[in-house]
Length: 411
Image (cartoon, rainbow, N blue to C red; front, side):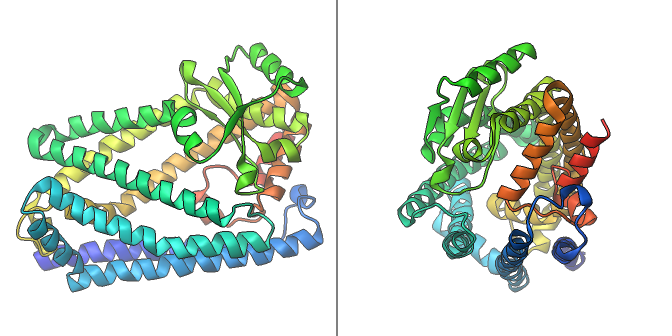
């Protein structure tokens, strides 16, 4: 029975990975499909040839990262490498459940970070640099990497220790207490995102009093939408790509505009983007996302507790006793098919919400400006104009740009 369970786990991991790689392969091939008429003007001939080269390099890099990582996981599972690491952490941690879990997860976090670091460097200073996207200096890259590593270690250690404590001390109430703890952390990060976390990496400055700010405030007031602050983020320090986002909810709502957005778009296009974001707030999409996240969290914690509680799984994987960190890791592999299904549902709902937000921006502000904004975002961010439907279904939280424009055109 234990052998059967072990190979079922291996089959789940391999099956999910192969399916994901297949969808990615189809999407890569679809780069050469015929461009829809409504987005033929996004790129000129030279820029599209440049995009084809860029996307090919990005695809090859992603496979160069993912395939060895997947092979490493399989080798570690089949050879008992993860079990050996768990036993080492138990011995060094003196069988202390908190320390052994931190040691086990900590080693994997450090290895993962170090493994990805040279690829990130190559992507930033070779690929992004050659295609005129990168604005990051090597000093900034090092600083960002150190900050990210410290945040991962601190937050990772804190959250893992908290979950371990809840598991050790609450028994069958683990699901409830873990749910409450993670929800509090999630809400805290969401509320403080622009006041604590963004400033660690970027500088936020208030949007100066000008015609754009006045128009934003007038439009928001017309929609009975209160904006606490409007900030401009110095995104151009790292990349030439464009974005804008709303952060927080209730009285904590903030608007953040990339400085690159202000440089590449006229005021009408910027207002169309913000009208789209305001629509998400008016449609309660943030609250809906929080609810879905809570539901997803409850399902995952229930499955996690069941997985850890059944000793057959631990024994099948080569452990004589439960090791919380090890079981967390294996659970993340085993649950990947369920995570994929939940992602499909989440992305489907998200794409529907994006269409509704586009419709709001087109009707309440200007459909021509909304279409222009979508084309500018696609061009400046080097978006794929012909993504494969299967890849869209699995991974896209936003509809493809041609589909979004076609939806707006028939309103």
